[in-house]
Amino acid sequence: MDTEWLDQEELTAWVRLAAVLELLPGVLDSQLRRDAGLTHFQYYVLAMLSEAPERTLRMTALAAQTHATLPRLSHVAQRLEDLGLVERFPCPQDARATNIRLTPTGWQKVQDSAPGHVANVRQHVIDALTPEQISALTGITDAILHRIDPDASMSATYRRYDPVVS
Amino acid sequence: MDTEWLDQEELTAWVRLAAVLELLPGVLDSQLRRDAGLTHFQYYVLAMLSEAPERTLRMTALAAQTHATLPRLSHVAQRLEDLGLVERFPCPQDARATNIRLTPTGWQKVQDSAPGHVANVRQHVIDALTPEQISALTGITDAILHRIDPDASMSATYRRYDPVVS
DNA sequence: CGAATAAAGTTGCACCTACAACTATTGGCG
DNA sequence: CGCCAATAGTTGTAGGTGCAACTTTATTCG
Image 1: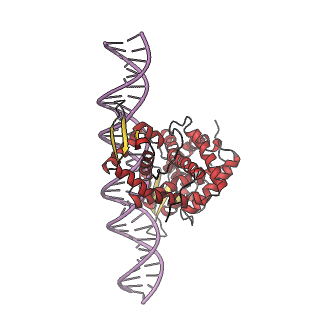
Image 2: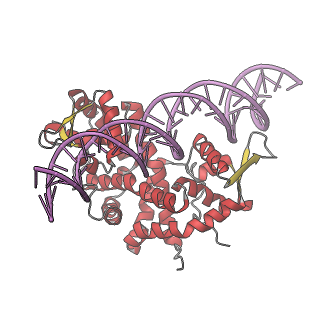
Image 3: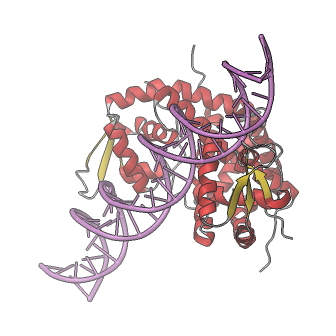
């Protein structure tokens, strides 16, 4: 079967998307690492916990919300636990399951680091785009996510991301 | 100074983009790893070399085209050299510099793995989008890249990405 | 009820990446 | 010419991630 190569427009769009894929994570990571000592993924984990009821989730649910595999989340949880930002304890309802909960220190960490992170996202992404582009981006990412993760098994619903500032 | 939080539209767009950032690299990596034993970044390095004159570039130039830091590229080059896909040799004009060249084996590897990779990109990205979305995506990624990498120091020009099929 | 299967996590290992430190060479400039 | 800053690249190390193997507990079903 013959390969259907990309035409000029497709190629340009893809090469630039690939560049964003390569560069943007580094931009997110280095700001958070510098200002908070966290990777973007670690921040994301804390942020998801911060808006959960009781600031607690089951590992599997958290893995889905953060688009991570369970082994990956398990390693990161270990690290965050060493840092005193989360704590894990067995789920009373299901002895197989583990709950993970934000500690007061972890909650404070999220509060402290959220403004800088949001400013960074604004500076490098949101403020670079027109309202029409924001809207188009939503549609584009939606379409791609449906191909990548058809039944949205990796995200439940797409909910708030920034911490609740109580 | 007060934080300017994201409104609903901005937040939705950002959360989805973050999801793509998290999931898409895994999709690219696992197809290439399975079918070619390469990471996406390794493939990208080989692809860039495949279309350079003499299939040769200076390390710094290749690092710019692949959006990588020099240390990162140096490690990857070592690995690709161990695999017999590239070779490095000192630049005659500048004794500080190192040239990196695709070997015949490396060239063959790119030829063999390109169709599967392109099919994967089509399946998960390009074919999910309308022509209008492709066009919008180009504009959006362009705007973001200008913020992330203002003087395009990390990319010279955005050129072909798929290997030349001679 | 009891065996088989599936689900939930953890762990180990190999590889990848960032960052800092280091070597070697070049180019400027007094 | 000779010193000093800048450039090119490599290496070491620490931390992050994927994958496979493993343990434990729940669920299914004969």
